[in-house]
Length: 348
Length: 291
Image (cartoon, each protein chain N blue to C red):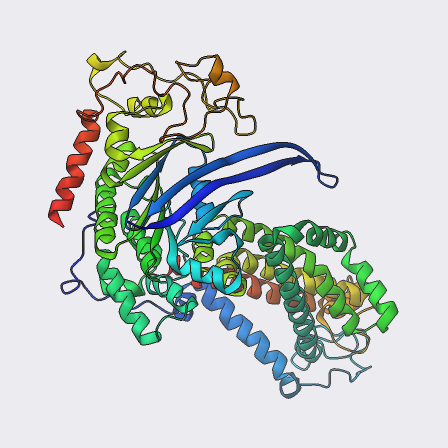
C-alpha cells in the first residue's frame, strides 16, 4: 500500500491577546501540538479523543482550511502547506471533507443539484450536460434519486443531507476524504446507514478516509487504524484490532473503558478518569496526561514522552495488562449497534 | 421516517416550485406593496403627463385653498397646485432616496463583506466606519453643500456616505454568522475563489438582514433628505420635493394643515410601501419558505 498522506509534526497554536489596540499576547492555546501520522491509499485512519483534543483542528490543517503554525502535510509527496494558487486548487480537487452537522453544511440557497455540481464547475470538469448526468449518478451512488437534484437541502432529513454532503465531496473524485464526525449528529439507525455507505464507497472508489470520531463503536466498525489524541497530541496509534485488544496507553484504556455499559455487575472493574482535561492554554509539563493518569510516576511529571512503537508513554511496557477484556467484546449496547450496522450492510 | 435508498423509477416527480414572483403575490402585504410601489413609480415617471397644473405656476387668487375639484390636494402658500407638485416631487424624493440608498448600501455592503471575510483588515475597516458613524448626516450635508453648493447632488452624496457605515455594520455582523457555518468551509475546501465564495455563498445568505435594513433605511433617508431640504441644503425652491413641501407648510399648520399633511402622507405611503415590499421580498426569495 502506498502512502497517500504524511503528516509531520503538525502544530496549530492560537495566540491569546488582550486589549484591543496595543494587543499583548497573554497566552497560547496549543490546539494541535506536534501530530505525526501517515495514511495509506484506500485506508481509514480514525482520529479519536475527547472534545477539544484537537481532532477537528487536525482535520482542517490536513485540508489546509487553516494555516499550520509549524509542521508539514505531505499529500502524494508534496508539502501542501506551501502551495498556493493553481497548485493549491489542484490539491483541493484531490481532498474533500464531510462535515458533522448536516444542517449547517449545505448552502440553503442552493438546490441539491447546484451543491453537487459546483465543485465540478469550480474545477472545470465537463460541460453543463455531463455535470448534470454526473450529479444524477452521484445521487444514485449515495442512495438518493436523480429527481432530488431540483430540491433544496432543507427538504431532506439529517441522514439524507449527510448523503448530499458526501455526494458533494465525491463530485471531484478525490483520493482523500476527511470525515469530521460524519455520523455523530445522526440517529443511531441512520448512523448505520451512513457508515455503511462510507465503507461501501471506499471499497468501490478506493477512497482514503481520515475519520474523526469520538464514538468508539463507529470507529471499531469503519477504521483500519486508530490514532488516539489527547490535548493536541497523538498518545497512541495502531491497528484497530491491536488497539482494541491491547490498549497500551492509560488514556486509551480509559477511553475504551468509558464505553457505556448497562450491566451493573461490571461496575467497579474499571476506575474512570478523574478530573478534567487541562486547558490547552496550560498544558502540564512532562507527559500531558500525568495529571489524570492513575499510573503516573516521577518521570511522567518531568519528561515529555515521545511516540515510540505507536504509543507515547514512559510506562507502556511496564503497565499491568488491561483490566477489561476488550478483545472479547464491546459493551453489549455497543455490540448491539455493531450488529445493527452489519444488518443494515447486509440489506443494501 | 425512513432514510433508505429511494427507487428512482417509482419516485414521484419533484413538484414544480413556485417562482419568487408567485410567492410574492401569494402574500397579501406583498401584493398590496408591489402594486403601490409600481403605482408610485409610474406616477413619478408620468408626472408631466398626469399633472393637471403646472407645478410652478402660482395662482394668487387661490392661495392656501383646501382640496377642491379644481385643486385636488389644495394649493400651497404661493397658490401652486399641491397635487401636481407632489407628482413632480415624487421623482426627486424617490430618486434621491433610492440613489443614495443604492450607492451607500452597495459600498457599505462591500466594506462589510470584506471586513467579515478578510479578518486582517476588519479592525481597520470598522474603525473607519466608526469614524463615519460619528458624524451626523446633517453635518455631511452641510460640509458637502459648502463644497458643491447646495443642491440635490450634495444631499445624495451626504446620504450615501451616512448610509455606508450602517450597512457595513449590518452586513459584517450577519456575514460573520454565515462565515461560521460549515457550507462556507465546504466552499473553501472545494477551492473556489473568494469572489465566487462571497457572491454565491456568503452574500445570498445575508440577504434577509440587508433587505430589512434597506427598507427601513429608505424611510430614514427620505426623511433626512427632507430635513436637509428644510435647512435649505437640498432641493432648492422652486423644485418640488415632498420633504421640502412638508417643511414649507409648517408656518401655516394651523390655518391650512393640508399643505404639510398631504405631502407627509405621501412620504408615509412611500415608506410604508417599500417597507412592506422589502419584508415580502425577503420571504419570497428565501427557498426555505418556498413550498
